[in-house]
View 1: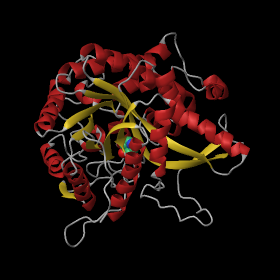
View 2: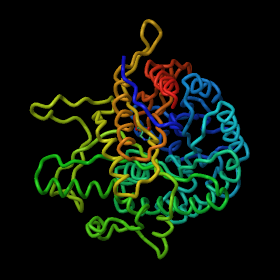
View 3: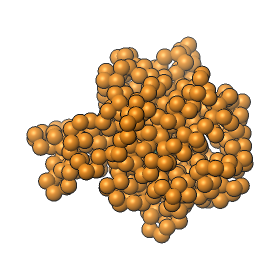
View 4: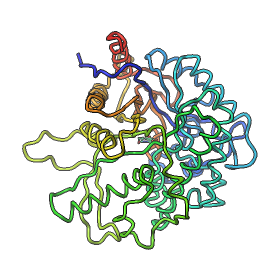
Length: 458
Ligand code: IFM
């Protein structure tokens, strides 16, 4: 019997998903193409050769999953809106059927007493804006994003009170533009800081717009927080780790909370510096109501003299166990199970950034789940993972973090980007041929956790 972590009264227990990863209906009812439609249809881009054309088919049926959420006792749900479903060309003419889909989804969630947290951009940039401006490589896209936010908030703002502007801007810019493993699949390091800056600008402009339209709304952004440690205790590795931390973490945090980018990093990147126009940093740094924290694992950084500018190499994959220490455990993504890192991040944000309201907007793990002969999916590793990470979150609350909710990544197995359907993160198993759902043991564990919470009067 596992021990259940305890959370304060009113704490939200949710799961998170994103449009491209679950919806399907990629070419229906007037939806425009996103960069992920184009990327996944390009041979060689997705390891399994799969696409998100059908995914979990929630475009045709979201009620089944809402019923499951209800059965598990979840009281919040984070989902994202497909920008090209609402605005097929990213701007201009609105697709009423796209808006109607989200409107019905929100109504169904509220009917089930599940609070919607809506992300406006979870990487599925309209292809039309990619063609016209290079996506967020172009400043224009930030302004257009604010218009898109306005369209959505005008339509859903009477019912949706929690908005997340962007999901993981670092990952989108880095994987999409620097490394090219994600859509749009560019390998243009010189565009990286432009994209990151314009994403932040888009965030700030959207915050202004949402506030003007819906003064009682809570608005935030979701960042992936990365624990970065030096690979060896040398001065060079420490310096490399500091820079990697600035690149992946404080570039975004300092911009949002302090209105500036880390000076050391800016000096280092010289000609790659982002194109900051007067007033940009003030727009980016206006107050937000909460920060969404996506946390998974830690990485180790070593000094590499031959890597231009950063002289640093980040390794998140398996490594040699330290002598005398228990061997590290890894998920099917090859990410180390490192619950302590979640506590450390929640406390670092609390101490360094003025005790912001926090939500864990993603945390979870992929394991190679299979349906057993008894028809169930036994996933003890995921239960252990959630138990360990959630306990660290509960500990951070006790130590002063203002954490208000926890969203597990993810509700059901879905399209894991360049990995296709090969990685199963869900607490609900999906047979991708039949769309059959099976609640995994971890899903039932979450239900018990929530019941336990309620039974203790919280
Ligand atoms: O599936 C992704 C999600 O879209 C963004 N955060 C990380 C998850 C797991 O890789």
